[in-house]
Length: 148
Image (tube, rainbow, N blue to C red; front, side):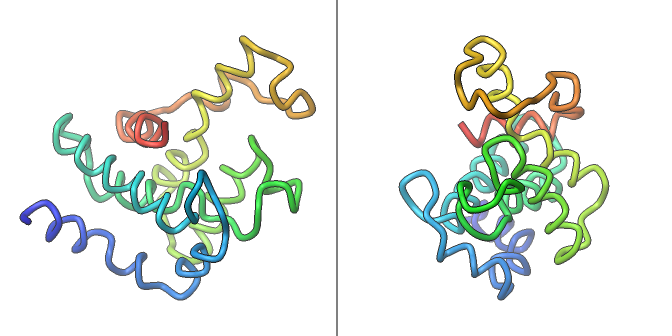
């Protein structure tokens, strides 16, 4: 109960925001984007407590890591490896996230970039550099782990 209270204190203003609620309309990983982002954020919150990371940063970046409108296949900016930048731009626009939180969002697909380097035929039309997508902080790494 204590974890849930702290989590909702950190997440509440995003979870109830009209723009964020729009994510309930988009399918994502067998659920909708809203529930997916909430799950990633809560798992990240628990990991942040365990690893003594910035919980507020992880909760916000976790919630907003897939904060783009529409399906991945609808627009190029929503694609497999482009959507992190779109999500970070939307997070800045609607929630005034910090540059560090935006960086956490932008690098949340790092594990997929690694897979793409090993298996180049996966989403072969998209390009991504490991250096540009590598998490730059403990909090960013937690977002990646939480999104598995």
